[in-house]
Length: 150
Image 1 (cartoon, rainbow, N blue to C red):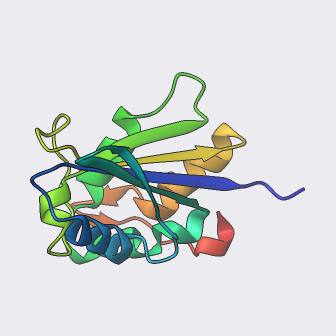
Image 2: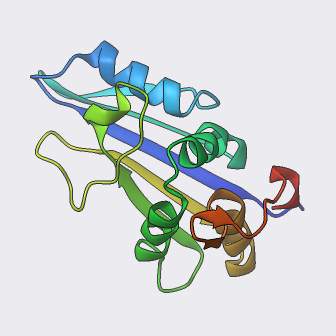
């Protein structure tokens, strides 16, 4: 059995939001995930989907493009579970609609994009962190890992 990374993503759609815009933001950030939509009430729903480490490829790219490796690594560590097998963090939904990353300090009034990453070992999750957000020196990665090395 191969060691796996599981990525789960969800975002609520509120009555004041465009369902299409929320879907567009999600599918742009996570093109490898097929999102399903659940109607939670008459005017409220949730997109959700899951994938493997390849679902994080575009996030990996954006973290470097926007030069937020250190901030991103901090967010991963802040959300780390006690058992070291998972982490969770949020992405600003509004900023995501224009193809950028921003990590809100807390859940936003209209909700955020919620991401959780789970591994079947703490070492595997650490390798995922190092691939996604390597340690840096003055913002320059100390190393870059290939996704297949995770």
